[in-house]
Amino acid sequence: MVERASFWHSGIPDCASAMVSWIEGEDQRPLPGLHGTGFFVRRGNAIAFVTSRHCLGPLENDYDEVVKRLAIPYHGVKRKSTGPMLSRDWVRFDSYAIPKVSWNTDEFFSGGDLDLAVLKVSTADDRATRRLLSRAAKLPPTGDWFATAFRVNGGRFPGNTIVQGFPRNGTETSIDYDTANVIVEGATFRGTVTGRGDYPHTWRIEFQQEHARLTDLDGVSGSPVFLQWRNKYGMMAALAGVMIRGTFPVGQFIDVSWYVDALSQLGV
Image 1: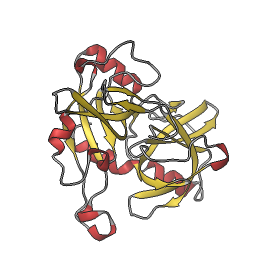
Image 2 (image 1 turned 120 degrees about the horizontal axis):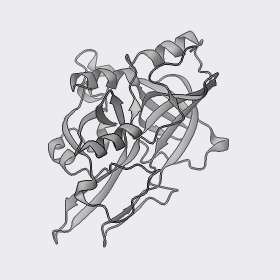
Image 3 (image 1 turned 180 degrees about the vertical axis):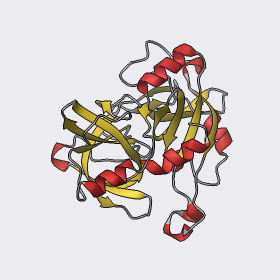
Image 4 (image 1 turned 135 degrees about the horizontal axis):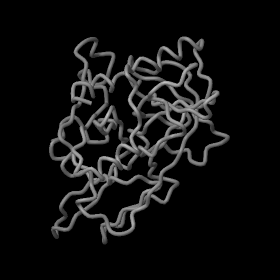
């Protein structure tokens, strides 16, 4: 890592969002729900949303309906909403993909499931596009940079691994079902990549217990994983993967290369 790459960030971008959705209650009022984390990525002016597949529900779910009912705002946690959220404040999606593998399926989840979902964003106007582009994490030209860097550095990375998500416990995150009011509070977890995970597409991350404010990973599935290090340009960060599961202090995430390939098929 000598010259500054096009997909490096100066700091961690405000790309993560809580996975909020709604269904129509018995009295026809919206009934909100919270189910994990997701994050925005970009290549050029094309924007997508990445999360863990199980954040959208089990494999037998009608994902068309789930995606329609997502209530994910254009603004991030660093820019607070100034009033009640309306439907026009929510991101819409053109299409989505639930990638699977057709080889060695027994080594992955059920039927070759990767536990990964990618959604292509349909932006409402130029202002919304600019807002999401300013938030989104940059996709690397090829996803294999992470595995290559791990190998070149002798099985270690010269910095921290940063995970930003929306855990259900230990934060202000809550739902008032009487008023349909949703409050979300993000959290940052720091750790170290210790090697390959339990599946061909995952890596293992060990979180720093002595510095952790929270020790509950419920709600962190779908969170972005960044590698952060310091060099002559300052503090750099690059997208490394997406969290899928884990029990503190050890979690697992999917290598960025797996969703770079999936997003390419969606035109991102």
